[in-house]
Length: 219
Ligand SMILES: Nc1ncnc2c1ncn2[C@@H]1O[C@H](COP(=O)(O)OP(=O)(O)OP(=O)(O)O)[C@@H](O)[C@H]1O
Ligand SMILES: [Mg+2]
Image (cartoon, rainbow, N blue to C red; front, side):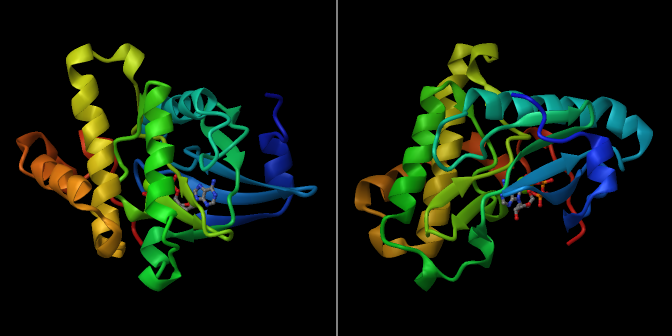
């Protein structure tokens, strides 16, 4: 899609800082252009070596993932590359799951969230950081949204024997959050699935970031 604005426009206009990165993390901005609100994830402020290697790679990865997932309700729309160091997409008004109290979450929320993750899998994409409650949004309409495709992988470029494991990593992230926020509606089949996945050694590394793709953000 055509760029809705350029870096020059960004620098000349108003924007709000959503988060300041550190080392390998991007800065995130919220930008209003006309009636539309955008998010820009920008690696330009990172140290030059990081920006030119890691940053460029992350921007490309997130942009390609969002392009492949375009049209799935609950995933940021209209991705574009501002330049080689920054990716943009539409802002989704809401609060992260981390900031949302359980009583503010509707009964259908996690069923709908699971559906988003399964639709993503049908397009041969895995996210790999679904456990992180800052990557899940409760929108102002009370619907789920999945953010942050920096650690995502296109299964078409991944050996087939890893596909099921990777999809299970995502599903275990859905059920993990479900069991924390709405344990009563997590039925016995899903609970048994979560428990069996938790016993698997390959999930141990999920206690930190998957595949070593992130460094901690100063919060
Ligand atoms: N499309 C969006 N709509 C609304 N808010 C967003 C959007 N994208 C990102 N955010 C906000 O910015 C935060 C950070 O976004 P994201 O996870 O993509 O970046 P990050 O560099 O991985 O940050 P972190 O290290 O905190 O996970 C999200 O938790 C969310 O609050
Ligand atoms: Mg994130």
